[in-house]
Length: 126
Image (cartoon, rainbow, N blue to C red; front, side, top):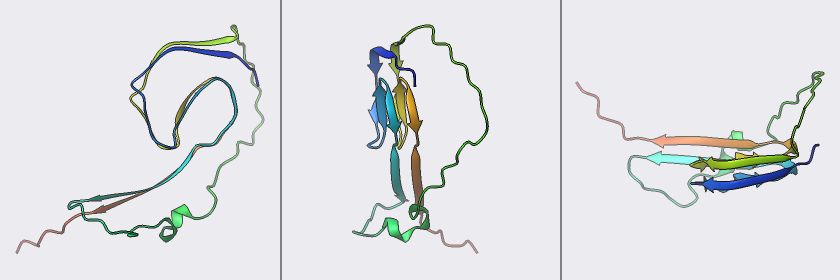
């Protein structure tokens, strides 16, 4: 990994989700991960212990990461030992994502989201 100096002069309007990353500088491994059950209801009535991760198959077991297994040749020319950012404006960084200014050896991000919508049924028109 090529190590460089990262310089950021200004970072504006950034709101982070709790599993997001802002990394300025080099890192060896980044592994942001999140599990979400998002429930939307027409009437906001919720009960304790109503939704549990273990009730949904998608939250069980290892995430099936794919591995790139093909021969590849890369030539990188880094004309400057400095990564310089004048101004960065980002409104929001969502689950298991990030902003990274620098070099990384390994990045694996995982996000599992189950969306549930409970809507009122309308009476059939006769």
